[in-house]
Length: 347
Image (tube, rainbow, N blue to C red; front, side, top):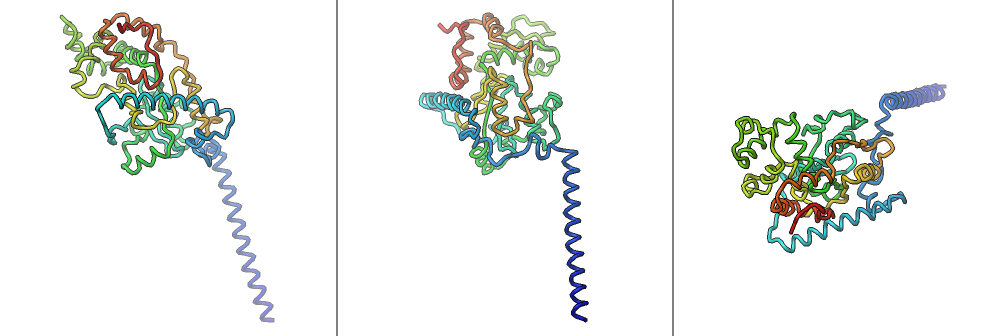
């Protein structure tokens, strides 16, 4: 009788334990689906990382329709390598990068990406996209992010913030990409944006006043004080002046890609081009595995700087200045396979 009672009590305890376990599991399932209903982005949104990272998908695509793009980007990588090899053979300069050289390389830990941003090559929209990718559900639409917020340094982590060992690990294992643009078109775009628009008074004060003071004869007091009417010819003279080089690195908006992203020191896995911006950008997002929920913003800006517009600006500067500007940006032309513009007078 005692044995039977003991068995019954033991069975009762077991039943209570099983019931508690099932109830707990049921509550967890309910809690999970409540979260998913409020924030489906957690699993099915843009920031889910698959079993293969973007680097693996680039070099060994599992999607057959990506094979053609892989060949194109291999050609672009080869172009950079060849240009750097020729430059290295003809130059006595040898340089080792420091963490300070890596401040333009934005890191996305979740998707194992490194993006080197180049001003005047859709970098605002790419920073917006990187904020979506790294935001873990905070953002879903890049265009909902104000442009000024995209440029706040604390919103994105850059490679120079890591230790040397961490930097080397990421350079080896993450997909590294950048976007480039025809060098002179990018240069004219920077000039138009920073020196011809009234709201960029900080650039007028910082650079415009210096340019007017150095290169304009009989400048008015207003021009010397505000620097708001810099001519392209004066801007070109400033860029090729040895004194400018002695002042320190050029501002990022007209610095060469060669100096901003160091493609002869860092092996970029993908070189996107402004001329095929949406196609190349969405290719990156496909490699990451987020293309179904995140697209690169469409870009149809009527005021963008064109080749014809660039030719018009260059017609106003001397042959000597044209030659000097080409020498300054020559590596960008060579590395990224941009031909010498037909309007350039190099003889």
